[in-house]
Amino acid sequence: MSEPTSAPALECPDCGDALVHVHTEIASGAFRTQAASMPQMPIHYFDCEACGTCWKFATRLLPDPVRQIVRDAQA
Image (tube, rainbow, N blue to C red):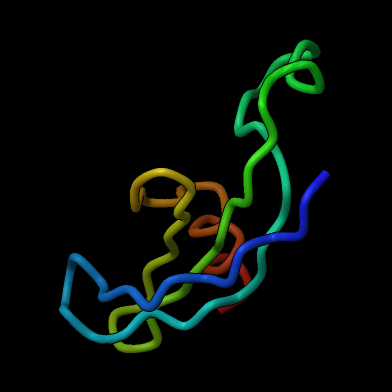
């Protein structure tokens, strides 16, 4: 397996501020038992400090509702 690529510099789609890279993991992004046999890719996780939203990026930037729920519950 290759090393994770560096996280791209991205802007928050909601407010336009720069996103803060939280962490990167290598995964397929699938929620199935067959996920291990699927192609693995770096998935970068970001937070927007300005508006408090959570995002993930693999092939495109998407909201991360699971991390958003956890972050909101801790606030």
